[in-house]
Length: 114
Length: 112
Image (cartoon, rainbow over all chains, first blue to last red; front, side, top):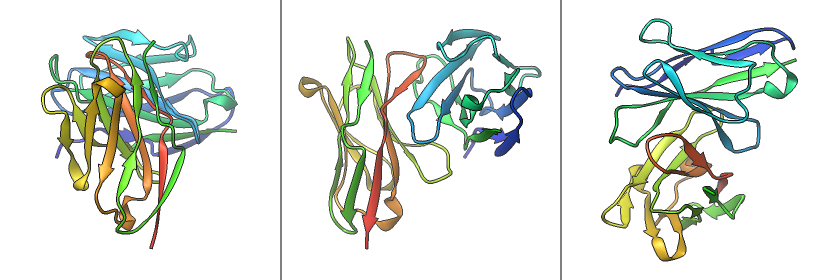
């Protein structure tokens, strides 16, 4: 069964460093998302991406964050200058097409900022 | 405002017992509703979903959920819990084609 894959599974970075989290959505899906889950808290929406542009973003998704689909298969989340409070599990997700409302999640990338 | 409430933070049941996890939502129309399960250190796996039609939906792993519009609820049930069901369960809604809004989750522990 096709699945969303994410790399790395776990990354430790120093505060102030840039981090790129990578995702390969399910082939032929058109809508892409990033969510995050701070330890012990609920899963929060960060950003949605469609047709090579951001379609919606949350208040969390400030100027420190950016997303990109550089080559038609990968979907990346970049955090420019990490803060301690960016430590979380980051989930990539994708959805097939308009009219199909199920969102499929990857296994997540644990980011620890020290 | 759109929101999802899972009143029970932590539930413990005995293996073989029945299970019901509560989910209430707030939304101006009929939302699309989902239950996801997250095992420790793992991603989010879709258990089941409700879009329209029959209000009792069946999912994977023997789970089912019932949509009750009058109560704004979408409770998850399983007649007989297995030890492998121990995980965190998230109810979520979508108002359309975009983001999911998650509840805080219910952590399920299963006693042998």
